[in-house]
Amino acid sequence: MKFVAFERAKQGTGASRRLRITGRTPGIVYGGENGQPQLIELDHNALFHAIKKEAFHSSILDMEVDGKTHKVLLRDLQMHPFKPLVLHVDFQRVDAKTRMHMKVPLHYVGQEESDAVKVDHCLVNHVMTELDVSCLPANLPEFIEVNLSGLVKGKSLHLKDITLPRGVASAKGGKDNPVLVSVVMPAAEASEANAEAAAAAAPADAKAGKAAPAAKAAPAAKAAPAAKK
Image 1 (cartoon, rainbow, N blue to C red):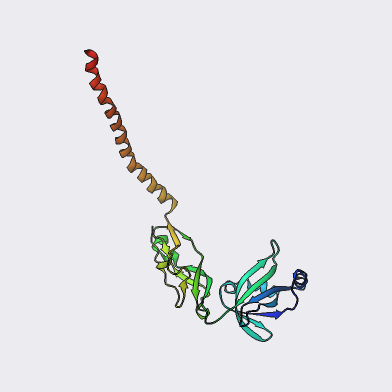
Image 2 (cartoon, rainbow, N blue to C red):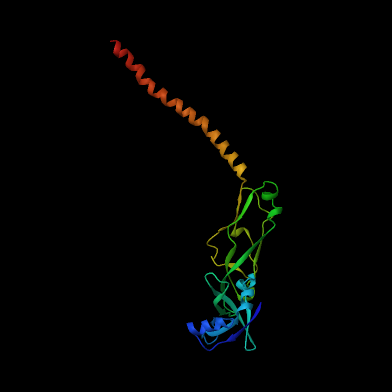
């Protein structure tokens, strides 16, 4: 995804305020060969439309400044508390040889074809909507597609149950196996299961209740002959 930015010379609260009045958004780009941040400004309307696209937040962007193109990532976006206004934007230059950490959206497909939904009418909850991954910039996916057509009742889908794209690894380093998708029984079936469990427990409770008075009655029977003497 490509966007155009312009260098800006002035910085500070007053300069940024004047810039916004003219329909521009102040920004900054970190990283690079010299390590010095670069001050930039962007057309606000173009930026506002761009941030509505998922790719702008999760993929490597081509930033054109003065006719030169730079590979960058969106790192921070400051919005006005109640107005549809972008106050400031931060980018980071990308080094092609350096592994990076990035949150990538998860796209779930095929759940309507699964036995859990089609046969057992279970509820499918998407516990995680994005995944923190580690990869080289060239391997960064725009999103990760997860096929849910194999879901069955009573079994959740964990991170280790899916195959990540080539060159992409979980940033957890394999030490964690979070639940991505949970499968929940329908409310009516869950209530029926609870009722059956309660009914099964009732005879055991009744039997225990009868045993207790019998144990207490035994000493009273022994005490009766002593009273006659």
